[in-house]
Length: 142
Image 1 (cartoon, rainbow, N blue to C red):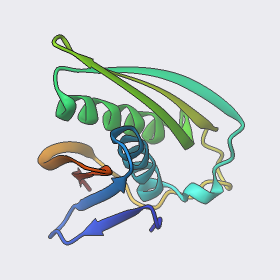
Image 2 (cartoon, rainbow, N blue to C red):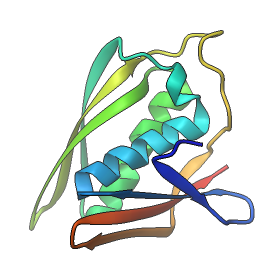
Image 3 (tube, rainbow, N blue to C red):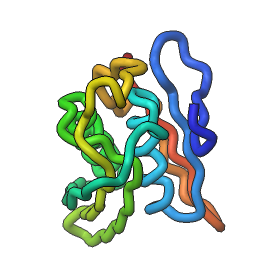
């Protein structure tokens, strides 16, 4: 388990908690936690990058859609990020997330699958913004 996230107690799924100095840092750590739960993050090299745009009508849907994007890319082997830089903007029309994923495609023999994540869920999802940072908790269906 990475030192930048915690796995909280849950009966059968991965209940993840990340903390950061900003909402953007928390989103970045949440995305990397999904990667690290599925594949050894330290085995991934930043050989290329992918720019991503994600929308949400609120912060919860933005987080869900972002984590779903990470999950689909990792599950397909299309792209394994080892670094995620996030910028979030919001308005009355909703929220936009722009991210740059740095990493590489799945390479058999180099990247070992750890746990299969079936889905991101809204169940138990929390985004707590506080002075000096934020905390995000979310549940991954294993």
